[in-house]
Image (cartoon, rainbow, N blue to C red; front, side):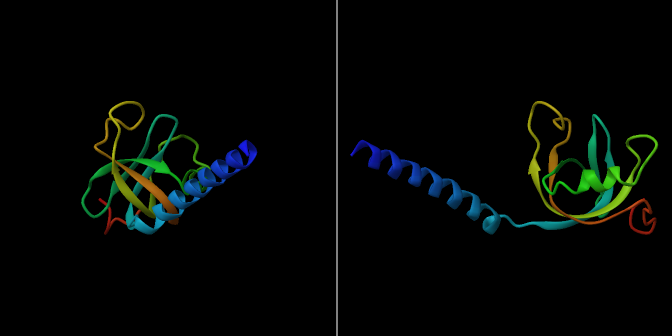
Length: 122
């Protein structure tokens, strides 16, 4: 009897975890952001070309930092133009990125290039 109860509880926990995870993408409204991204050991920042607002960046796509590093810059923090799909969230009060009001959470990398369009991003 106790073994069945434990299996039942484990099944309920697993179902709960999967149901919560599955619903998060359905209710989150992602947007496309176009701007200048800089990456280095202590700073991951994005400057929006539309309004000049700066954000801390969290790369949930696991592609943004990878593709940036593949551009083979000699030193960190070289700016690149990116187009990403993501969402803005309020930054935490402590730790890396806390000096920014908002954090851009990147879900998908659309474009990355060393060529920053001057007509869009000044």
